[in-house]
Length: 194
Image 1 (cartoon, helix red, strand yellow):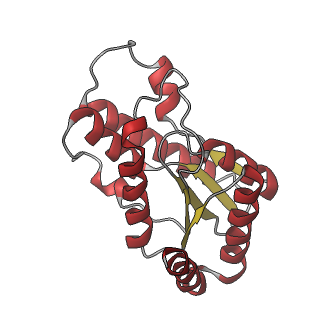
Image 2 (image 1 turned 135 degrees about the vertical axis):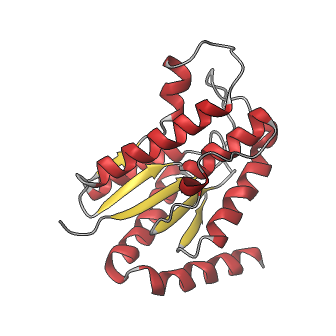
């Protein structure tokens, strides 16, 4: 079986990760791994109950299990809507302490990180609750991407612009492998910061 590249989409609440993951999977004729924390929150727990550390461990482990399972059926590339690092951030936001039971999954590597920008309005959907923490979370995702050693890019603008930009980065990873892009994507980010 050929090696499947893994692309992880990161971003604060309401930044378009799910929309982008689905659109990219469709564009590349492959699969995407939805965020497991959402259905768990909607169906797997009593509404309003206090969160426990065990639940975040469960979410991280199941999300990664689904990712590994789907990688066996994906065509060339698998897109993942968030990762265990995201689950660890929510552990910290909800419980006020770092997650310690799934650190092995938090450091999981990807062939490309796509960070969704904050230039879209926050929308409450019945589950989202951290509008005030969006900037802090966004900065954590940028730091995760920068320190990962993998190629990464920040996507902003209308959905179509994000899709085109992310698709070009995915094509490059599929074509060239991770080493050459890592430098180029970081160069693009430094130019944006100037």
